[in-house]
Image (tube, rainbow, N blue to C red; front, side, top):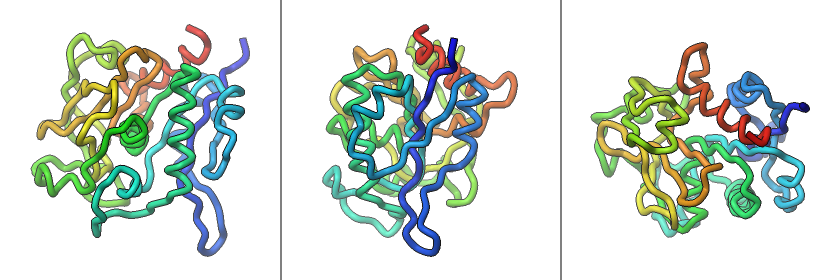
Length: 236
């Protein structure tokens, strides 16, 4: 059987210096480790349906913030790397992937994008809402760590093999506020920040606020998320 093709969204278009698209290699290696071939998807592509018809699965990566104007939010000094081109491309990807029932893993920004695409919104700067007792992000250069509790009996608990993660790689300052249509929270940080979402009637979709691609060492439950995605992409 041929290895499935998994699309992975890249970061925004960098226009200064040498114009380029970038993506941390951890996403690529996590997909490869699970037995699939990663295909990088760059903002600006207008043919989402044609693109997804050639792919077997989709990873929505992290990266810069969503434009608050896209969900009725206020601007904030902490907002960075906003890119309307990327927001528009990924909203189109998400809606098309849902219509095609494409297996999808949404990570960090990807979870937030999924929520907004389905009519929800996000906290523009999480520390203004929950304080800083739980370190969701300490810098733009490296993740921090905290535990997560997962709803027993949820699809996510089955994918991870348990209802508790002692440590996840956290790297965000925004988070889900009002839920999008059909979405339900299934994991929480110690300060009750939503850490994962599931979509009613869409078992092919998983969305987590942390970065599982940074914890795929042998024996880690995070590897199971990518194995789950690739298994669905194979038709399993």
